[in-house]
Length: 223
Figure 1 (cartoon, one colour):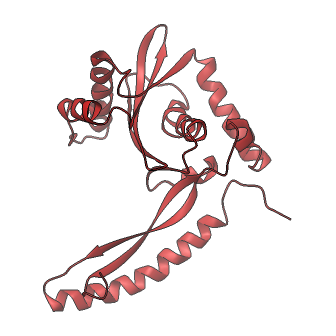
Figure 2 (tube, rainbow, N blue to C red; figure 1 turned 60 degrees about the vertical axis):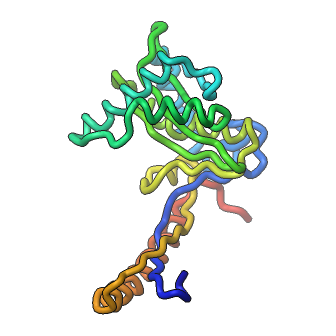
């Protein structure tokens, strides 16, 4: 695409890589002591709050499960004073068309749902995630958006869990910085030249940011 005149833009996302872990504890054993302790504390807070978690594919998810998730999804946007761009019909259609790819996670307390997240699995990768909650529980976001996803990836032997864009806080939870790239065609050469110059400047900053993130990974130092 660059040879055809498109401009390439570098970015950074945070992905979790499955290194053949047997289970979640096996993954935790590769982290530094303080990061391992923090994750266990965060997961314990969810358990101590009386929360249990169900993971379903599209075959097992019921209309009530989808209705609750759609409500959670919309609530997340309301809390950020924004409008959701997907609706209940979209999630229903995906559930029917790709039931084997869907991973719907529902958190319950006192036999009623209080939060949910939605992920997709395909081609050895897990993609996430939309999420929302109807009541606050400390660390529940980390549980449903990251830790359960890691457990799914380990259990299903998926190579990578892409937890969504942005978020340096993912570093402390075992995710690592990965370069991403997008291509853009600018029709007006005057704009294209100016944007190309800016992208060259940005690329150096993105590389420095990636290197800094690598230095703050949660994994134990080797050697």
